[in-house]
Amino acid sequence: MNEQEILYAMALTRINYFNLAGLTQLYQELGSATAVVENRNHLRDVLPDASPRLIEGLKGIDSVMKRAETELAFDIEHQIQPIVMNDARYPQRLKECDDAPLMLFYQGTADLNQQRVINIVGTRHCTPYGQDLIRNFVRELKQRCPAVLIVSGMAYGVDIHAHRQALQNGYETVAVLAHGLDYLYPPRHKPTADMMLTQGGLLTEFFTQTNADKINFVRRNRIVAGMSDACILVESAARGGGLITCRLSREYNRDVFAFPGRVNDQYSEGCNNLIRDNGAALINNAYDFVNAMGWNDDATLMRAQQQGIEREIFPTLSPDETVVFHTLHKQNDLQINRLAILSNIPIAKLTTLLFEMEMKGVVKTLAGGIYHLL
Image 1 (cartoon, rainbow, N blue to C red):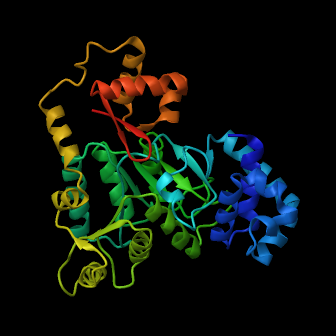
Image 2: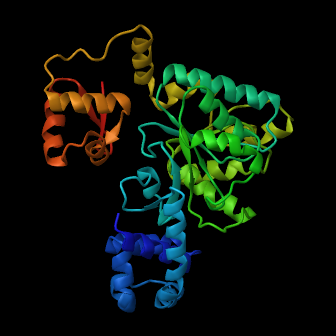
């Protein structure tokens, strides 16, 4: 990604902090942050209903460039990846949302565009009942779906238990933070966060030196919801923050599920009410969830692996096809541009190889141009 494009994208997020939808629309109309800045003096020609605030803010773009340069220098020094919306690494599911952030900051190793992505959310006061639900659900899910990215928010309660159970069961897990990547809140979760840097990651839309203010937790919920296929509510009070993520998930046309709890239990009330009002589908376990999502093919693959069935049974693969095979075997479900980087094969040549491998029944194409090793 061009450094100037990153700097302009950072600057744009600073001047238009509270009008995300308008900024995203303008960015998508012109195709890059650089184009937005270059057209700032005749913005109405591109976006007739652009807000006066946005127009005025763009006039002062130079005043925030210094802050952007400082931020980028920090990112480079601390191995933080600034991901602009038109970057292939940007969560493509999130990109579909009108209020998606123009850019994200990321530390970690997980692909944010995996075939299966879910979020697990709920109360900060997770009870032993909720902890058991998370433990059993993640363990059972691993048995049925070997490759799922689990997203949550690193908060106390349900969030941190979801991250820890994901790690213990061999899943990658990403935390969406309500502050910049120069510190961690709450600090006591740092050991878990450190593990996630090599088995998942930390993701945020916020610059460094941003406090974990209450409004930021609400804002980050739209990222948790938007980058996932489904939202799972474990426990919630009647007005719990997890209900915000559920509402956003429905608005983004994502599937929403909730575990029921005992009547009159404080931290089951939100779940029970949501199920009662048809805001979420009731699930009792991972089996219910997998069936509802139609992810049963993953269970078939897992059974085959557990029985020791070899997947390398294609002796007719060419040397280049073998490279692609081993690349996907190591990290399955990749878009072609990511696969080209990891395999060190040019995209033009890779396209032909993937076609031949699909004809041989070695790979198949999934939605979003993702290649899956069979």
